[in-house]
Length: 175
Image 1 (cartoon, rainbow, N blue to C red):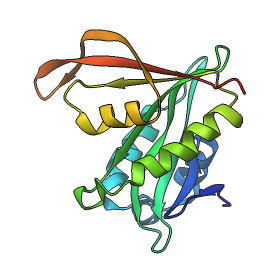
Image 2: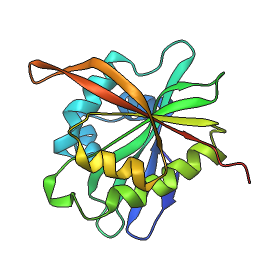
Image 3: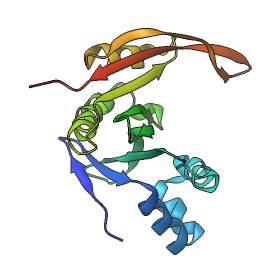
């Protein structure tokens, strides 16, 4: 299987979409799937695939973040709840291991992924929902020029409590 990559200074971003996942899960043995995703992410990726990530008028596209030198999978960044007709999608991201956090990897990845969203996916609007206590993500929203647009009360149920989400939006620059 051939993969599409975007490279940055320190990362290789490997494109993952439904076609790629179908190829992996239909052609790889379980051991190969775990090796492909890495042990820390394999269980979530297997569950995501089993549950189905695409639905009517909404789909996803994301990138695995690989260390450019070692090919170690360190996280993901991409789009879900992509409304093709409306040219908007919600961005999401995570770094799997604390050893890779606070090193600027997500800023590096977001630069490429936002560019990809506007120019390859033809998005007009990128949305983000961020927990009010997620300081790292709040900093990223500010850094990349996302505008705070409101708050969804008790939007996520996590850790036994309901947590609000702050809504952010970024409109494609017109230049």
